[in-house]
Image (cartoon, rainbow, N blue to C red; front, side):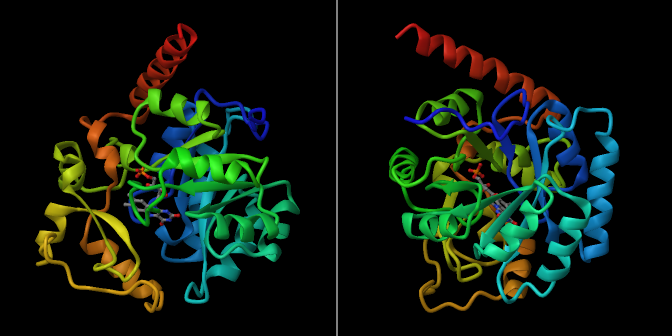
Amino acid sequence: MTGLHTCGWKLALPVIAAPMFLVSGPKLVSACVRAGVIGTFPALNQRTTEGYVEWVREIRAANADLPPDSAIFGVNLIVHPSNTRLEADVRATVQEQVPLVITSLGAVPMIVEAIHSYGGKVFHDVTNRRHAEKAIAAGVDGLILVAAGAGGHAGTANPFALIAEIRRIFDGPIILSGAMSNGAQVAAAIAAGADFAYMGTRFIATEESNAVAGYREMITQSSISDIVYTPAVSGIPANFLGPSLRSIGLDPKNLPEVDPKTHKIDMGAEAKAWRDVWSAGHGVADTKDILPVSDLVARMKREFDEARRRLAKV
Ligand SMILES: Cc1cc2nc3c(=O)[nH]c(=O)nc-3n(C[C@H](O)[C@H](O)[C@H](O)COP(=O)(O)O)c2cc1C
């Protein structure tokens, strides 16, 4: 196993609060940064590039008292022809020198070079080895391995196997994504060869997330069997809360068939789908309370330290 890749960041815990469409905004990101983990948001959570820049400045101002190597925040850019804002958002990202950029769908050398020009890092979302190879060839700094059970567009691979497969071809930061919601699981990810844990669902159920009360509560009341993995909502397989599928008239046990192989990605249809249906992953299993981010991170730190002590006894 390789050494730990920290990217030179000083964090309380090796955790990235994952970018979530409609859920993550400057309040959540700043709360994460202040608690000692990395906060991120999708640029498209703001309607315009100007709005996106406003959020970046708001996050910077709220954390101006922190040392630069601990005030790490990131933005998610969707690299796909249907994202008509991409060019303007990349330009704004370079101008604002956002420390971390998370690219989804396409891994493009030109974007990686633009972010590297000011010392920023690029992490790219992958679900399998083929996509990892393409991202490595594009020069990204880190790979986010989206395993089975993740909220949003989850993969289907087992996380242990996925880390092992990608570690064989990549000696850089690996960020594990999927179904982690406590500090012991963060320790397990690191022990298995990842450098950071990427957590979405757990951060929806925080006081600072933009999720409506009913959404947060549904997460705390759900179990793994309530999570439905389906392409029926937007054409791309993703994990959704079963009761929320019912609320738009879909029967989780009898979903319409969609072939993701022939489906054309349409950002408009995607955005509409995510407004109507609530997504969460298998991490609902241990997401049972709605907390301020500072309390959540403090508890995860205790769980992380307890897991380290447990391992040391083996
Ligand atoms: C409601 C929701 C919205 C999401 N939106 C995005 C997004 O806009 N861009 C993205 O790269 N990933 C998105 N994701 C995926 C997360 O970034 C992350 O991979 C996932 O939540 C991790 O799994 P977990 O929820 O089991 O912790 C979303 C996930 C959820 C639950």
